Image (cartoon, helix red, strand yellow):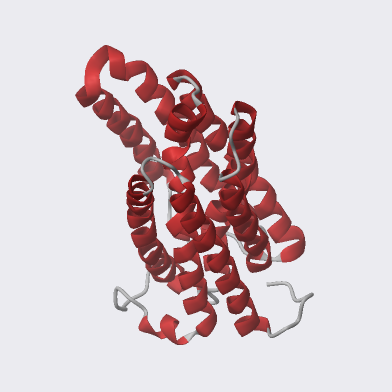
Length: 278
């Protein structure tokens, strides 16, 4: 992601969004591989097949990607000066909160469909495929609008709020049609957060030679949210005796708080200028 950002200045968000569609495509391919191979060749070889797919894709990246800017001659693993920038710090905190609750639905929408709504195992996999597949649109449209009209930070904020609202709305889903509608809408808007995260992070970096270290710092901070969020949601489901209300309220609250923190980051950068593109 950081390498791609150095090649573009005018259409950087769109370029990163196109690259980010790989995760949506993987969200279609990997569950399908597991669904078809697990009963035939077992867990071990299914995981090995996934590894071979990743190896093939990564080999293409290693073969064809080239750096555009020369690497820094010196520099620490962490650029501590970035933490003196209020906008950067608030953005990282906001994205930590967003990603803390964001992947809960991806991990548990299938189980919710089976255990609460009563759909079949095959339909629960299709539910996950829908959530990931529609994310291809959600990774392209907001990035296009970011480049053409709004700017990255302005674009990601409403996607955070809508994703939080949808998480709260999930608590009101009690039918098969409802869970399919939730999967489609949430998949669309949460994809916007995922694709706009690196695009906005790169836009906050003026010196492209520091794009790699700053993006690495941002991804490292968010990684702890991605690591702890789904298990925490699982613990809340267990605490609620198999019901999802506690986890849904927690995830919705983290996304709304994340959106509010991004608003604070924008104010720190531009003040209260509503029409300012950033």
